[in-house]
Length: 168
Image (cartoon, rainbow, N blue to C red; front, side, top):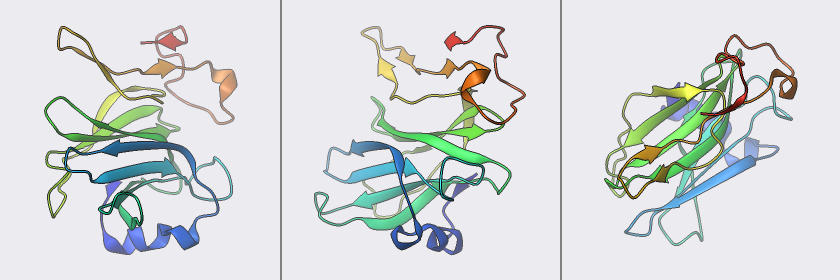
């Protein structure tokens, strides 16, 4: 689901994208800029992917995707986010539909020459459109919400899994 293979990444370069939506940005302490958004197809639809692009020159230029969330042509990855946690790690998160999982992968050293991502893992169900928040207690809150089924045009096994839409 987290793709870093150059063959796949070459199919989602800037020149091949018709649109980009719901962006997120993060900057490392050394000034490396990471951007993510989602795209694919001609609209929000099955087959969407969420790439990560990087700038090492203050945003003047960006490398083509270095990673992307994409499963297959039966799913859509969307609402991706980037966040540097208090430990200095870069989190890349995204939604996966129709499974309605919010997934993440962590890069332990986002300023490294070669970026290495951990294995993707499930964070929660449905949608997370914002970065986590760190409380004064040190606890981390991930803003995951369960949306009402009326907001989606395709079926989902996890919609309203708690019985009530809302924030969790």
